[in-house]
Image (cartoon, rainbow, N blue to C red; front, side):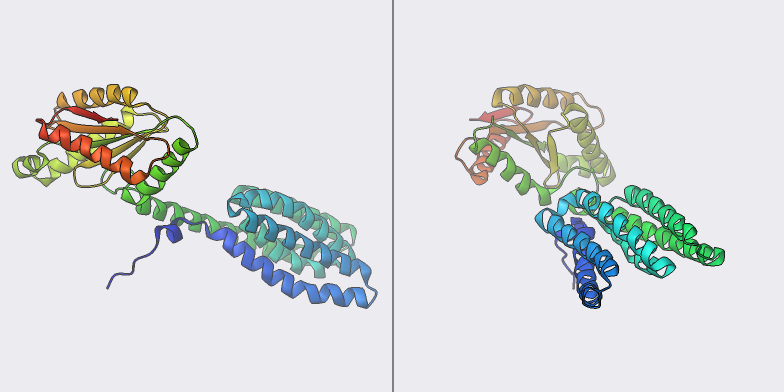
Length: 328
């Protein structure tokens, strides 16, 4: 039995969700303290805790509004946390240092590791300065500093490892492992975006369908390793020739699709012929290429666009292969 995991789950950033959860816990935990201190006339402490709660509420707002703006949310939360931490240290002394540990962890959840490390370094230096002028004991300062550094190092390493794993899993989810090209998983989403732009009045995009002719003969004659090398060489040639904005997908064994952003059918035809000619003269691929092209239309659907492109490829195949066919 195989467990199928959604690529959306794999590629999503864990930090916004974790930061929201942590801020909810922080708000629930701190609010009673805030209310208690105000009712007992300890307004300074109540105000400090209120600042922490406000910073968490601000973070909630930004993260729920746009989880992708997590670093921006961090730059809003950080100054409030710094002010609150400074006031709490000045009011409570070293006892307030315990509250700084969850605050520093929160910064790693709402900012990049680099920015969080810089801000936490500034925060601990500020904390030590306030504690020194309040005559804190030297041994206490050393223990506090060592514990702070260890926590920040461990949390920073943890976040970096998770980010690296997410990047790795993202590539597994959206890229073909043999060629490194995008796979079918991301194709429909990109086509929908291109068709949407066209429907909104932007210029057309052109979809190019490519199929290596008699690819089975390469595997039968030279072996599957040589067939894999041919596919990788084709992927390399395509990426070398195309623009950064163009997207290349491997959608089958020897089938490829190219999405040419903001490209007319005539311009795509010129490019397709260049690609076909390059493959024909390649000594590494040992076969030819059939190509079908069709441009997006306003007020149309992705399904119709794909059908026109497939029909153009079938026409190239049926007319003798090693050629480019267009359908308006």
